[in-house]
Every structure is written in C-alpha cells, then in structure tokens.
Amino acid sequence: MSNKESFGSKFGIIAAAAGSAIGLGNIYRFPCEAGANGGGAFFIVYLAIVLLMGLPLMVSEFIIGRRSGKNPVGAFKTLAPDRKSWSGIGYMGVVCAFLILAFYCTVAGWTIDAVGKSIINYYHGLDNATIQRDFNSLMNESWQPILSEGIFIFLTAFIIIKGVTKGIEKYSKILMPILLGILIILGVKSLTLPGAADGVEFFLKPDFSKITGKVLINALGQAFFSLSLGMGCLITYGSYIAKKDNLTSTAFAVCISDTLIAVLAGIVIFPAAFSFGIRPEAGNELAFVTLPILFNQMTGGYFFCLFFFLLLTIAALTSSISVLEVPVLFLTEELKISRKKATIYSAIGAFVLCVIASESLHDDTPLKIFGLRIFDAFDELTSTFLMTIGGLLTVLFLGWKMKKADFMDEYTNGGTVSMGLRKIMYFIIKFLAPIAITVILITQFIK
Ligand code: PHE
Image (cartoon, rainbow, N blue to C red):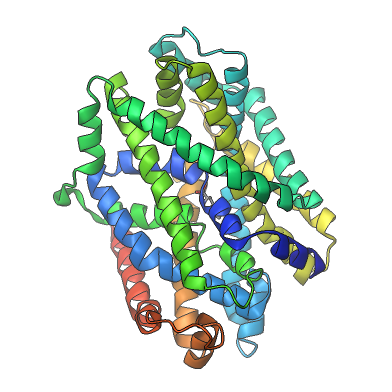
C-alpha cells in the first residue's frame, strides 16, 4: 500500500477527484450528447441526475473506498467478507477502465493532434469547409491517430509510474482555473456571433416533450461518465481520503465544478456551431471543428487555440490517469505485481484496444459490433451499461448490504461532524437512487 499512501497524502482529494471528473467528458462528450438528445431537455434532466444521483453515488464510492482503504475489488472483499460476489462490481470496473481508455485515448489523440496543428498555426486562414474536411480525413487516416494516441497513453503511464502526481496537483490548481477563464472568454465571443441566439435557445430552452427513455439513459450515462462514477475510480480515490475530510462537501465541490465546466462548454459550442452551420447532432466534429473555426475568428486566436488545446490535453491526462489507476491498483494489490509492471501491462492493453477503436472510425470500416463502430460500441457499453449498472450495484451495496451504523459512522467521520443531510442522503442511497436507475435502465431495455 505504500505507493497508494504517498499518492494519497500528496494529492489533495478535491484536486484529484475534480481532475478525474473534468476532462474530455465535459468539453467533447457533453455537447455531443446534449446535441444528439434535444439540447435543453437533456440539460435539465442532466442537472437533476447530477444532484439526485451523481452526488449520492459519489459519496457512496468515497465511503466504500475510505472505509476499506482498498482498490475496488479488494474494497468489496473487505467490506463483505461473507459474500465475495460483491467484488464483481470491482472486476466490472477494471474491465470498464480498459474500454473507457480505448475511446478516451482516441479522442485525446485528436486533442494532441490539434495541439500540434495549433503550434504551426495550421488552422489560420483555412475556410470552414476545409477545417471540417480535415477532421474527417484525420479519422480516416491510419498512422497519425495511432501516433498521437500512443503519445497520450505513454504520458498517462509515465505519470502513473513516476508518481509525479504532486506536480500535477500543483499545476492543475493553476491550469484548471485558466481553462475556466478561457472557456468564459470563448463563451462571450461565441454568444456575440451572428445567429448565436438559436444555439442558446437550442441548449438552454427545455422542451419537455422531447424527454424520452433514450434522453434519460443518455443523461444518466453522461452524468456518470463525467463524474467518473460507477467504475471504481472514486472508490480508488476514496481510499486516499483522510478520516477527517468531509465527504459531502468534497463530493459537492467536485459535482459543481464538473457541471460548471460542462455548461460552459455548451455555451461556447452551441451558439458557435449554429452560427457556422454545424448541426448540433454532428457528433465528434462538434467540438473539434467548431472550436478551430471559432479561434480563427478571434483576435489572438493563435494563442487561444494553442492554450485551449494544451489545457484540454492536461485535463484529459488528469482523467486518464485516474482511469488507468483502477487496473494498476487492482494488479498491485490483488495480484501483487509491481506498480511499474502493472502500469506497463495495463497501458499496452489499453493501447491495443485504442488502436482498434480508432481504426473503427474509418468510413469503410468492418470493425463493427451490432452495427455500431467499435469506438461507439465501447462508449455505449461503458457509459450507458457498465457504469450505470456499476452505480446501481454500488448504492444497493451501501443501502442494503452494509450496516446502517457503519454507513453513518463513515459518513459522519465517526460522529465528529454533524450531518443534517445524513438521513436524506441515506434515503436517496437506499431507495431513490436504486429505483430511479432501475426504472431508467428498464425503460431502455424494453425499447
Ligand atoms: N470523467 C472523465 C471526463 O469527464 C472521464 C472518466 C470516466 C474518468 C470514468 C474516470 C472514470 O473526462
């Protein structure tokens, strides 16, 4: 456990958990999901889910991690020694981590590619159609994406092996507020473009008739993905939280900052996309084409573009290390493999899957499962299936398997903090969250 303790003590938990939460999920995936699911309707459902299910689930994962002090598999084994099958939740998390890394690193590869292009001022003077065509041809290329994915996975593994988390913490405290600042500036610019109002209306005006089962499950999946829930990541980080730290306020701070960044991303992207004639349901290109076009129209666009994509890469890295940490900690604690070897094996596994996922984005790809490109299949499988089921089982464990007294003890830091919220929180974890998640999952499966 020595690696873990040093990692934990040096890494402020809010910085770590917010670093995990804030990433491509906010800036790339949230607009894609909102765009494909009706905009404003999705947004309202998303907010409700973050508060009513995301926050309690985050607290639940912290409780399980801190109480056990272990990786997700070991945590359930420790807390339910009489029923080892609960550790299946942890194993599911390990599998989920690889599938997430496969498509996450593909997208992070595009970000690295954009950093390279920003440095050489590649986008300057290109017309909108060319930027769009360029992004599509990137997805159809073989070697360039593999190279940038490789660089990204290498960086992720390097950070995990070197344990330079202290540096990351120090820098992310400065860099993440800068990312926030840039997003605000971009938001102002985007809102003043001609035709921006349509984008604002699309994103913020709720049309409740658009709320379908599909919107619910996608919002649930997006919330879990963005908050890093349901796959053991925050159980892992929970095991580093000090006994005196307040779990609710930590979780609250993480949920708020994560949601703020996602909303800002929407405010930047939709008005600009509408103004440039990019369809809101365009998918992958929504962020990666809209933003370079936006930068082209700004004074100082060169610097904004470069800084933005650099910061996005860093935000993606602080997320990817938290994903990779799940299998690494599992391998070191449960299978007693050295941290270095565990990291190398896991990174190679993730890289192979990532190459398959990114090659599946070629126009004529045979790499499909059930009609979905492997990239999309991994994304769907994890966020709408594995993470939601993982989250459901986690709240069920806390509400129905763990003793209430143990829950309260951990939640109130051994009774030292009085938590007015504790009864409501327990009620949500025991009844509301499991019922709501089950209903959403069932409506989806019936369809
Ligand atoms: N939450 C991260 C993001 O939004 C992605 C992630 C998912 C990280 C699952 C950890 C676990 O980018």
